[in-house]
Length: 454
Ligand SMILES: Cc1ncc(COP(=O)(O)O)c(C=O)c1O
Image (cartoon, rainbow, N blue to C red):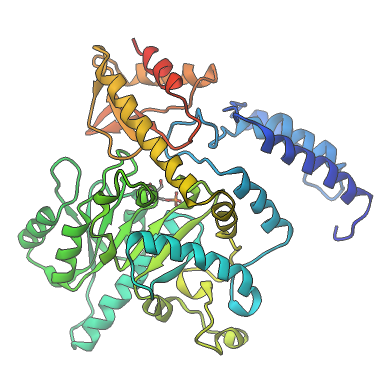
């Protein structure tokens, strides 16, 4: 299994050939294989047993049955949820990271990889206007980042209360109903409760936050405020400056969830909407979303990483050796993890190869396409735009359609390999939603999709 023998040589040829072909696909097709577990069961039957199989036979099962049953999130026709659009450079470098088993746990073991990852974190921190001391690490996704950040927020609140001699209590986090579902999951895991702030038009503002806290009457229980810089469903950027000011008055932690929309910091046309992000105590952006990195990659940055370290650092006798020199940066100390792959490296390579300007242009492209789509929707009398897009998400309705009609329309588009555009819900109503991200999604495709709602 670990020597370079005939089987290895065969796999180097066939697996790399598959990877090469996949990399050369331009555009990447959507695919729609059989999702029936019984069919998939038949396809893989007998492969996992005591006896070996020819690698080409196994690869054949993957290529013919399993791979087609994965809708390509990196297709320019994938317009649902939050798509992906990893650059060719980042995909290639991800292979290198895997083939070279590059981990990014501690400076002792992986200084070179960590140094490069930290350059990327610094680039993002600079875009957010965070101070020079800011830093963090890459984790697997926005959910992991939100959890890791809010653990720190809760511990900071607990410590402050303990120092003031206050009794232990159950902590709360002020959020809007449009915060990502992972925030609510996180609160449940951490045994904290949400203080759900009613908003006008789904945007958390300083005024709404202050009013909710005053009405609630227990400001001392609030450990953190969570603001979102790009809600998942509608791409709305909260009033970060207002939320930050309220958090500061309360002495609470400000966490900004930019898992989807944080990439907009690189887009001059919308940068002013992020005003106030520089006050965040913690901030997340997922490069596997709109910074064109492969799965799975989320950047988690703290204003004061030493606070995060005091919460997340794992102590064990065999780990003392990595903690001997406080000047050495151990990504493992800044989130809920120990072993980690150097998942920031593909982004580092890609940024260096293409230059940041190419990223700015690609992000602006998706914002521009959302604006164009909004105009096209407004121009059709059988459609209604639900709200002006702020980033790359566009919500719209076909008045008179039932949920089943949206599903039929979406199913047909997928079946014909035109687009993957599952409907969503907005204020209880089933509606249509574009999530633009891939720079090669065409204006023509947008028109074709909406023309087919006539
Ligand atoms: C705003 C926001 N936060 C958090 C997440 C969760 O990120 P992940 O799926 O990488 O865990 C998402 C995912 O879409 C998101 O849009």
